[in-house]
Every structure is written in structure tokens, then in C-alpha cells.
View (cartoon, rainbow, N blue to C red):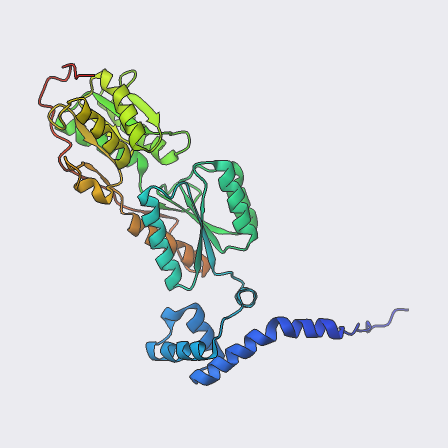
Length: 366
């Protein structure tokens, strides 16, 4: 008959020593910092991980002790003790376009203040590559991911749900979406741009934008723009829509195509495209805004310095980055974060838009 008390199998000296080796040095060094700073080990840990919660004088003593003892806390030990890696991942489609650089700068600052590191992946609008990078980040133990837009590889959201990884989608806002978001109403701003130009008296339009198959934000803005035209009994003429890349060259090429449809206003997918279109209009002797109005999107730093100064939509990327990072940090720390946070966009009226002063059907020089 089996004994009521199962025999204990003694742990091997190697296992016991291994356990001590994994935990003791880091703990011992932290205790040394605590003694030198005359605080508790818990206060040292808080100063290292959440410095904003520690009084300035105490934080100064802890940092002085850390410097004197040259203490560097082992990342693996910190992850084991807290259940977190203190790393946030961000996957963005492009880094060469300054709006993403501004967004990442804001996220980085918030992460740094909260004691987190930021790892950035760039996938160049390639959904398969984005999924590959997401898997690598999740497998490495990131606490959360920041994504751009709602449209991603179908397996991406499944991966995050299966692994319990927090995430937020930026540059989009939809309270009805199952995905948490910090951004703006793309369909709404598309309608507002159309309403603004209609209010000036324009009735014939053209659009030069990026590839909407790879960019759900541009696709949704275009859909909103078209919807507002339909509401006013209007539509884009055949050939009045150009979809290319987000470059000066495609701004030029797009303008060269759509100008043949005789628009009085050209709507551009972003400010870079708009400047390319303005350069092409200048080379063709088309006066903006006397013969043609033009509007961009993003309000890049130089948009107000270009001549003529560009009318555009202001996207407050820093505000969006701060709020996206705060939403992720709140989720990681178990706090409350709204499911959808809306960032307000404004149309900044400058010198490239005006009421049409010449007959709409007058042939522009193509």
C-alpha cells in the first residue's frame, strides 16, 4: 500500500546553486544600493522602474548610489520579478515621412519617462513583413504593440489576442471597432475637406493620393470625400483620380494626369504629394489659387513656408503619440484607458485655396 507521505526528492546542489546564481547577485546589488541611499530595496526598485513616483530628494540619493556602485539591474531578473519586459514595440509603415518620426519621438519620450524602452519596426506597407516583425517582438516578450491603422494581416490581431499582448491602433478612430484606437476620424475629415471646397464654390475636383490598397487611412478619407460629393449631387470625373506613391515625383505625375479633366480644385493625399503637384502646376504656367485650388494633408513644418503657402489639414502627431503611449502604459499597468480616443483635426487655410475666379469649364493648359 502506498505511503500517505510521498518521499521528497532532494534538489541537487547544482539546481540549488543555479537558483541562487540567477537571483542572488541582482538582489544583493540592489540591497547594497538601498543601504548606501538609506532607503528600502522597494524604494530603489520604484526609483529604477517608476521614478515619477519617487520624491526628488530620494530619487537623487538612489541615483547617486547607483552611480557609485555602478549598478545595472539585470533585465531578465526585472522581467521575472515584475512579469513585464518593460519594452514596447511600434510597427510603422515608413520612417522617411516626417509624421511618423514625430509620432515615434512622442511615444519614445513617454516610454522613457515611464521606465520603458521602445523598439521600432518598419514594414514599408508590406503586411507580411509587418506580421513577421510582430511575431519576433511578441516572442521576445514585449509588453505592448503600437500599430498604425486598422488594416493589417488577418493573423496579426489573432496573434496578439492569443498571446495576451496589449495594443493600440493610431491614426484611426472608431468607437465601434473591436480594436482600441487613438487617432482621428478619417472618413469625417474627408467629408470636411469636400465641404470646405464646396463652400468656396468649387464643383469640379480631382484627387492625387497614395495607394489606397495599402493604406486604409487614405482609403477611408477618399471614401468620405466622395460621399460628400455624392450628397451634393457630384462625382469625380473619369481620370480625375490618381493613386501612386507618397513622393514629389508622383505628385507631379498625378497632377499631369488629372489636370486634363479640368478641375478647379485638386485634393492631395499628403503635403509631399501636394508640393509635387504645385511644382508641376508652376511648370505648366497654371496659377494657384487663381486658376486652381489645392489642399494637402498633415501640415508638415515647411507647409507654411512654401510659396504659395499650402492649405492643408493639421495632424497633431505629437499629441497622438503622447496619448497612444499613455493608453498602452495604462493597459500594461492594469489601469483604465478609453477604448477609442479621438484626436481633433483642423483645416489650416493658407494661400493655395480660394473661390474659383474663372469659369469651371475653361480649359487649363495641359
